[in-house]
Length: 320
Image (cartoon, rainbow, N blue to C red):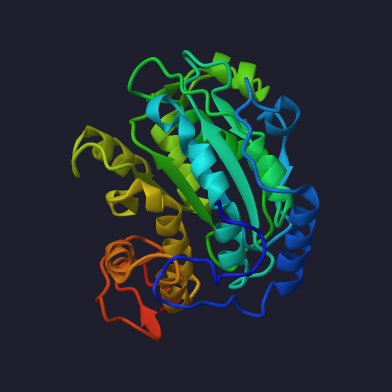
């Protein structure tokens, strides 16, 4: 399990790596709090900490670089909160050196037709506070049919989050493997979110609204085939270009970090980070398919694009 300190000498890759100077004070503070708390453990309780993960609350990001990471926790994906918890210090320490005001919100998505806790969300936070917040989520492992309640989560993002003005769309990354219920009943919105809408919500339209504010990606487990019905529905929701098929789910957090690092102009640094943990073959497997996509719109980019690059599809100027 990764630790909060900045000692990378015990990493198992062939390369060496040192974190940058940005965010040093926050990383050191997190490491001090972690050391005082003892060894990291992930306790699988019988349910979430409802006071922390209640989706009825409104949450507000103070940072101009908020990040949302949402995970489908139905069925075989129930263990994914642990997988992210394991790599949480790596995720935060790596990305916060690129933009030190990074704040992260975590969400667990289930099926409102069957689960007790179909939507769990944490406040935005950074550093060691994320440890408690992520540990408050519960991988229920329920769900009763293939579609899940991704639309309920999208409506929550549209109605329960406030972020400051940002100079670029912030990232929202969903890890999942299923289609969504096309209709979000108003009764579910009232029951789980506390909102008196009086009407149902179209899930695809809710996601299309999310994409107006958030740089949204669906990172799909290595199940199904590209272009199948799951891809087609998510393509209507967020565009086909923003669907990414993960080849190795043990590297799921690396795929997310690579996308963000690519957009923020630190892709080379991320690759060096990964080389200190993995062999070159794995670094190429993760980074090469991301290197040929625009991290804003998902459109194709030349694999050797570097420096200031103007995407011919969305017009965004990127520092690659």
